[in-house]
Image (cartoon, rainbow, N blue to C red; front, side, top):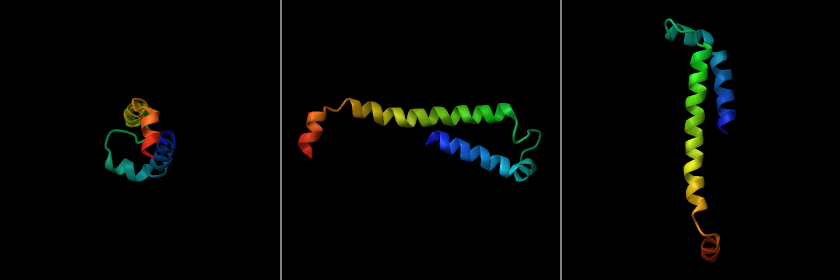
Length: 69
């Protein structure tokens, strides 16, 4: 899901290039360092958002969960 969101965001940024260019001075909207930084940041946030619940779920005993249902 994170990869899909990043892909759609990059396509959207490329499509709105002229609007973004008017608002950001001195930086190209498709500058590789900016794009790489944003992709890295959002990838880390997505990874942490998935890891925390998954880690908590692995600590639960499956027998206990099945007995509750």
